[in-house]
Length: 185
Image (tube, rainbow, N blue to C red; front, side, top):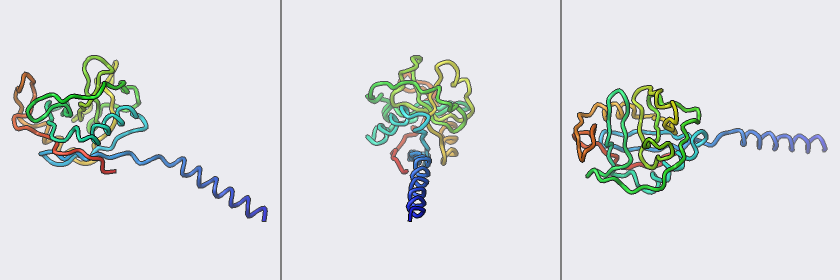
């Protein structure tokens, strides 16, 4: 009887440890754009602040009908801050820069856009279309996710013909916008 109790207790402890060791599934966000769908996997373990910030904007509908306002071939596509009429959207307070989290600005990663002030990121993000290791230097740009499906869509977006609109360079001549952004996992 004592052996059966010990065996049962051991099984319960083993199962509890196994469950505790199993990491939570990383959240996925689907960006439905005018050029197709982009699925992003976020990294809440290495970039908890940036991930929470991005998810807060996604869940509030903030990114719906915003444009990719900056596309530079051989570099990145940037969005998350302007309406289709090139009006900057009002954002929440800036977040702490998590650039030293062990993630790197390589092709297909999602990073927080910011000004020259390290802790100035709000809603804007960019997707690297090539390895941009220079963005990891100094105060760096915080990587917090990666494209898991739809990098072909990102490549179409980054190769869009561009113009200058509202004083901003590298704006797609034909607006490319996020029709909707939603958590799917």
